[in-house]
Image (tube, rainbow, N blue to C red):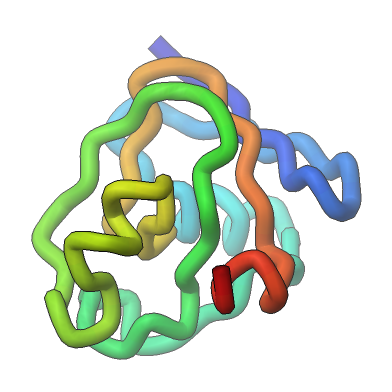
Length: 97
């Protein structure tokens, strides 16, 4: 089932296809609010915070996404797959906690 992800700062809604990562969907739709990096879960450039919704997170580097960040909703968008609609934040300040 396809879902949507809303970027809180811009209000932009990203349509997610079945099995498509948040970053791939954003790229496909020209959404530039989510930054792109290695696309393999190792650089952390695409880190965002999920404010609401459920998702599956693929394999990511612990160096760029440590357990304490995962515990408060940070994800790498290249490895994030929605299981409900999502609301995400891209603000750099939110990543400083």
